[in-house]
Structure formats: C-alpha cells, structure tokens
Image (cartoon, rainbow, N blue to C red; front, side):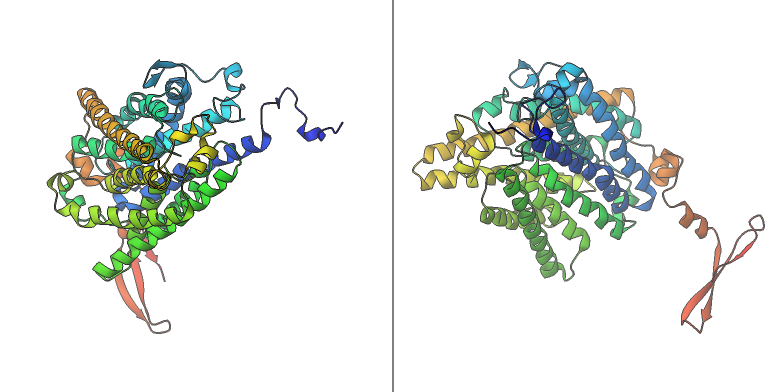
Length: 478
C-alpha cells in the first residue's frame, strides 16, 4: 500500500480534513485583500485629496481597519456567518475560542481561523470604501462611532443574507461571487447616504480640491488592482480551476474598463486623464466581482466595456444634470464607482452566468438553479434564467433599501452624541486642526522662507535664495 509523504501525513496540527494548499492560498488571498486597504487605499486616499486633508483621509482608512477587526472577532463574524437568529442575521458571539477557530470552516477545507481572517479583511475594505465619500468634512469622533455601528447593523445583515448558506437570498440562489452586493453596492449606497447627512465639504474645497501626489495615487491604485487577485481569486475557498478563471477574468475586465474610460475621456475632453483612468480601473474591478468565476472570458471583456462607459456617463454627464447627485458631495465618486458599477455587475452576472461554472463554484446538489438568462434562453430554460435575473434584482433592491435605512438611522443616532460634521475652523484648516499634524511639514516649512530668484547661467535654471527670519538665521539653498 502506497503511503503519503511525511509532509502530507495528518497530525494534530494538520487534521485530515484540512487541505494545506487551499489553506495557504486562502491566507495569501486574505493578505492581498488586506494590502488593498493597508496600505493601498490609505495611499490612494491620502494622495488623491488636497494636501491639507492628507492625514485625515488616510487615517480614516487606517482607523477603520483596526476597529472592524476588533468588532469582527468580538461579535460580527458570527452575526454574518454563524448560527441563524433570523432569516437575515446570525447570532452574535465571539470568534476567539481555540476550539471554534481550529475546527473546519463552514465552507472549504480550511480552518475557521482562516475563514475569519479572510472574511474580516472584506469587512474592513467595505468600511474604508465608505470613508471615501466622507473625507474632508466628517468629524473623526463621529467616524469612530460610525464604523462599529454600520458594521454591526448593516454589513452583517447583507453578508448573512447573501453569503451565509442559511441566508434568505442565498437560499433563493443569488449569485455574488466575491462581494459585488455585500461590499460594493453596500459601500456605494451607504457612502452616498452618509454624505447626504454629513453635508458637503467647505465651498472652497468643493471648488478646488487638487490631488497632492498623482504618482503616489497610482501606487495606491496599483496595490488595489493587484490585490484584487486575492479578492476574487479567494472566492472559491480553494486552489481550483475556478479560482484561476476568476483571477484572469478580473484583469481582463479591469483592463478593458480602464481603456474604455480613457478613450471616452480623450474623445470628449481632448486629454487622457490619469485620475479618470484610475476611476475606470475601479469600475472594472467592481463590476466583475459578483461574476468573476461564473462567466466566460468574452463576457468579462464585454462587462469591461459596460463598466468603463456607463459609470463614466453617470459621473461625467448625468451627475451635472440630476439635482440630488449635485447636492450630495461625494469626493471619491464612491456612488458611481461602486454603487453603479456594482449594480451593473449584479445584473450582468444574472445574464452571463454559465451553469457549468456555477456548478464548479457552488458544488451543491441544486446547482442547476444558478443559470444566466442568456444560457436559459439558449438551453430552453427561459423561466429559470428569468428567475435568476429576478433574484439578482431583488438582491440589489434589498441592499439599497437596507443601507439607506440603516445608514440614515446610524447618522441620526451619532448626531445626538457628537456632531457629524467638523467645525468651520477645522474645515478651513484641515489636518493641523483635527489631528495637530501635517502631512507635508517640510514643504510648509520651506514656504515660510522668502524666495528671491537668481538666474543660474550654468544650468539655465532659476537659483533661489531662501532667507528666513532672524530667529532661524539665513539659509542659502542652491
């Protein structure tokens, strides 16, 4: 009888049910998703805003990551994936006990500890995406309260309903491969709703809000893009052919979306916008997320064309024509890049989902209920395809209504405790007033000096003499 190599033999630390390869990949995928937030979105937010808000914007993300994880293991994980309390929510309980964490997860051949970590970084990035709609004016103390309240009252409900096998939408057969509904539609709608209640930035900031470092912004965007290999590739909870397809589809859709957005910017405005290209990248990533492992490559390409054009139109054209969109101040365009793109992704998933790929992903006896409308029409199962599309639309409506209601109530409650909005002085000053710190202290110190240009004939450039006050002394910089 053949015997397994010693490194594959089960032992107390490696039980028979655990697949070492799956577990290693899932931990890697979770780390990639974590890097999307820390440092990805921290860098993206901190560099894409006016320099006076760089610290505040980056720190909103940094704080959220830490707070979500404490709440996640304290009660939120079990509310999202634990024993059913009602059809849309699990019973709150801690996820810290050794016996619980070292047992097999509810899906896959991985420990529960790995599942808690993987799902935790998804919860973190959702709150950080919401922060993008609130930067530049939300009271940080209000944000400190908002994060645990929204995680508890909104995220757990959507996650249990859609992702947990006991959730009501999961039982209906909704397809959300890696978070198009739970993360992106939720974040887009919640961010837009919270922005309405917090109010806009100062008039000065709304008129002129230049990014402080576009090159650094691209670094943050790059971390976000590459990290999506873990975001969507971790969806099957296994090293599988479906995981490979999900990763490839992710990058096909994203590249197509970016190029489509870039082409539209160049055609209508005459210049290829770097910031616009990043927006197109984000909409592509968001749109493919609910479909990544259940659609063919050509469908991913088509979804990229849609995600690079429809959100572009809503942001660049409709935004200026619809009163509510103009009224609500959304600095990072979270509504367009996540709510609109996520909704498109959910609908297109309902159209393009391939039955065979759904079988590979769900591995359930009743996998036949998962079928895109296009394949339902092709295979004579039109009613099943229409049903799938109906379930997808029902999920979108549920997430929208849930987040409008819960976010509004949370903002109202927080407003009773602390102001939702910073004071006028804090809005005018920015980071130094809110945190007592400056992101670009060296630059500001240089600006204190008087500048007198002298022409340098050797290098054909201007030579500057920086003359400080008497207390600092005279400084010559060449």
